[in-house]
Amino acid sequence: MEPKYYPTIGLEIHAELATKTKMFCDSKNDPNEKEPNVNICPICLGHPGTLPVINKEAVKHVIKVGIAVGGEIADFTEFDRKNYFYPDIPKSYQISQYKYPLVKGGTLDGVKLTRIHLEEDTATSKHDQGDFSLIDFNRAGVPLMELVTEPVIHSAEEASSFAKELQLLLQYLGVAEANMEKGEMRVEANISISPISKSDFDIGKKYRSQTSILGTKVEVKNLNSFKSVEKAIAYEINRMAEILEKGEKVIQETRGWDEIKQKTFSQREKEESHDYRYFPDPDLPKLYISEVPEFKKEVLEKEIPELPSQKRERYKKDFGLKNEDVEMYVRGKEWGKFFEEVVSKLAEVRPLQEQEKSRGLTSASLVVLASNYVTSDLVGISKNSAERGLPAAPARQASEIFGKISAENFAELIRMIGARAISSRAAKDILAIMHKEGGDPQKIAASKNLLQKQDAAELKIIVQNIIASSPQVVADYKGGKETALQFFVGQAMKETKGAANPEKLREILLELLQ
Ligand code: ADP
Ligand code: MG
Image (cartoon, rainbow, N blue to C red; front, side):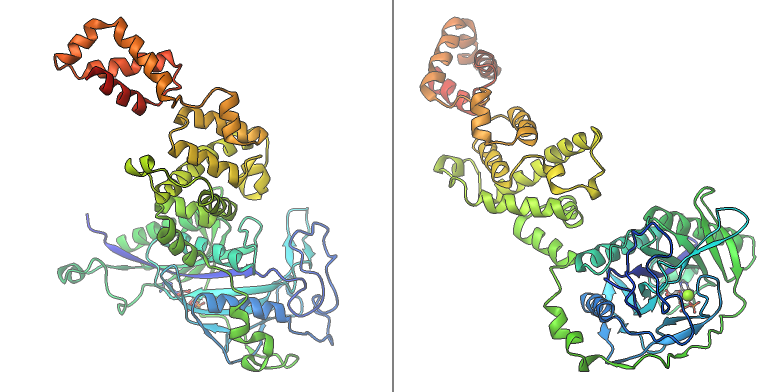
């Protein structure tokens, strides 16, 4: 059945910036501080008469994000006071940006952005201690980046994919840890649905055009994992469709996500938008970005590393890897780093032999082979060692993931597999030993007797013996029974305890059976 409603989603994402100090004072910005109210001072406590000072590092972080998404960096910008009272913002206003955000426009993961601005985080309240609430000001005044997208996302999966891509970008840029579970990145989803008219289909469009009128939106807060972003949006789309099906109207409101019930619930109805009485903060200077040397685009561009999208392109182009592998290296930076080291070491090990080239081995196919071994065998080994009590993957050090395997030894192993010096079964065993004990795969293979017998003279004798002891099979073969050849190969493998190269055996057999 064709869908009856067309969902539209716009995201508002907050990310705490990784800076040494807070947004407007020199109190430490430490998201891992467990002891409450230690990283505080009169400024971030909001005492009257104190003077905020702009943290340049935070401004630089946001400009870098702006450059990375191809947004327009403001020439003029200023900070505004957003006036409201809540116990976690007792100075009765939050310093934010309203009319002149630092960044306008840009695109990420195919989603158009509206703006990116800078503000300060609030304190955190705890309500679970008894009949009272507690306030911790460690987070008050932490630099917070807010990114707003246009309402151009049309599914729950697209929304969470966008949020993941933003997290990855912030981490690559080194501007935020953006760990959602820790509240360092917080997603709010604005969701609406609108009926798809028959004419939308008739004119051959799957969905209605951008210019169509959007439905009433609901804003869902408290989304602190990518899973809940997806689930809450899917839940809302369904809930709204049911309302419209009954002929009722969706109410514009703010809803929360109940992780336990897996449902959204109404928090407050928004009759009209809040009047925050924004006005430029008189305590802070206006910023003419291009006049501050360290804010210059040319200067900051140089500090921007290769971005996830660029890395994806490069991996596809240079290594010809499949998307899944590329994604693993882009998201798991340690894996990508290891893989690239292996590739560069592969270029240094023995050049390809003529006979290897003639059976189609190329340096490009060795690279793909290396990737297969990294993403399957090495991932498998590292998961096993994680199950044996090592910490979970993201928090692990490279040494824990890769054990004692060096990129050089790994490249050598791949080269040996490519050369058919070892069987794939033996390669797995050698890899496990390398992970645990380290070492050169050549030596391990030799000491464990895992090298495939390549010595033609030795193999020839074995094959001769087998042929001599099975005259009937020889006759069958000469009578046209092709499977007889397979029988001999099997016999020879048995004789060599699997150490012979089957291809080589076949070659010798064909020659001797002539
Ligand atoms: P508000 O003033 O309520 O915060 P904005 O117009 O500033 O609303 O938009 C906030 C967010 O909501 C943006 O991400 C925007 O893309 C999104 N949005 C706006 N209208 C809709 C809609 N009808 N459906 C879905 N998302 C919307
Ligand atoms: Mg809003």
